[in-house]
Image (cartoon, rainbow, N blue to C red; front, side, top):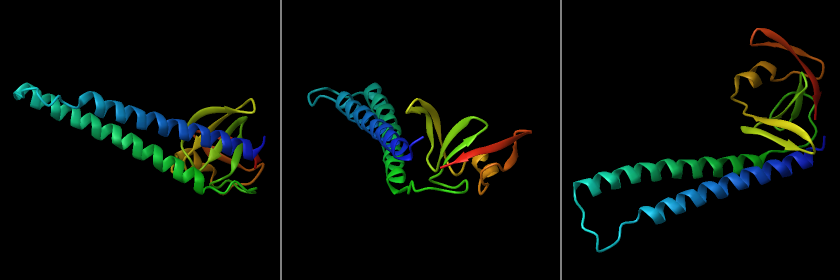
Length: 147
């Protein structure tokens, strides 16, 4: 597995997530803008409040996606010997990128999951080396590889 390919794929996914969040926010703002000659009544005002709340939620999605891109850009993907942020780790046949939360994705034909350093599973394997074991969820897991 090539860490440069993993980083590139993560970057593409995070950028696409950010682009999608920005597009949804912009579309919402465009669609919810009232026409200047429209009269407003109590129902219109209630609808405006609802639209404002949705806009706030969409803006939070944009900010979260921006933060994910920033975290990814700050990660050093150099070689690692222990489970730590910026490592690509194989545990019991599953592959994880440590340091950024990301749904499952495929890179070079390998399925990976981005794992936040705040995740309970990360806390269980943090600092371990190749061939070390840890207990998680009532079972033992083994570190097979660290890149």
